[in-house]
Image (tube, rainbow, N blue to C red; front, side):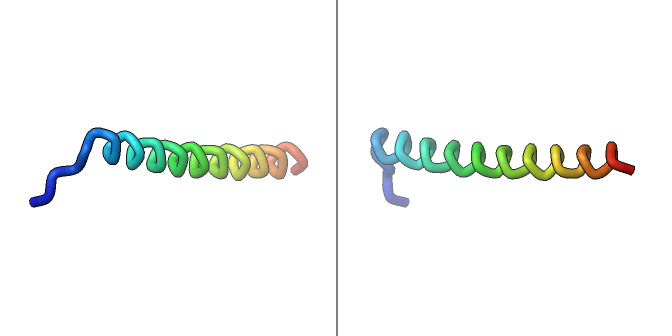
Length: 41
């Protein structure tokens, strides 16, 4: 198994974190939309 350098691990972690942040942001936007629709009823 190939060893991954510390710099590559940090880069991968940053990419993963950015992707997770984007997913969380999309989830919050969707939740806000659902709450808004629910309040309009």
